[in-house]
Image: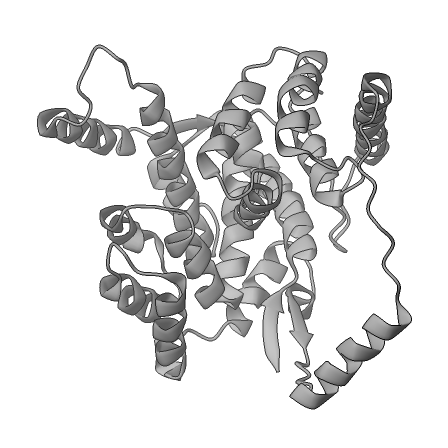
Length: 351
């Protein structure tokens, strides 16, 4: 029996809970400070993941400071940036509209990490391309399953591969004392916004077929299915443009309908509101789906695309960039759900 996280339910719940908690806090506050974030809600992991998401945002911002006129690889410059980060971390002050997406992402990542720390760390540590030094600095943000996280991160090497990580994580997973009980933590979420903790978890019965059965099944399929030749066709520009507009129009209509609802029920309905930053609105798990399926695994191309789309002043400009640049380059299928999900998030920037 394997256990994995119900990602759609976790995402919709994160949106609803973030909206509830920010509305409650900012009804009496104009801004939130670093010390208030640490005590923001009863779930420490959420509070510290807010700080982690914030620090990740800062790291993104530092890349924008790069200039062809200065040597940013110089040790003195690096140390200066680190000093600036330490100073800023003691002077955090965030308004509601900027805090909500940070909180939403922190809640979502907390749920994933609490339920399945092995998969979360593999995504966060192995596939994200962070430096080993950066990973160790992030240890202070992990409050649940701390012994497991410390054991994994302290054993990592700069060139650790995914299969090595899996072996290492499996070894530590055999020790129950490396993990905190998750049921009480999930019940804390329910005390903030009612939900059955079991809704966060998908339990799957793994069925193993015998090799002979798989071979026989494969042979049977080959005999019964005749695969026609694939004809390559080039769609006309008019059809492509119409399809793109239809994709965005369908997305906008769905979102507008959802936004007509004033409240989010405890069943976890996902209300998709305006976003201020496309990158921040994309959950960690979905980020790697986009990189893998839409950008052929090129994280740099993904980051550059989001930066370019973020800088657009209106939806029509973003649509034109997608149509002229990214659709032909990556050969996206507009009928594919991943593409539509990506367009949906982009469109929310321009409500």
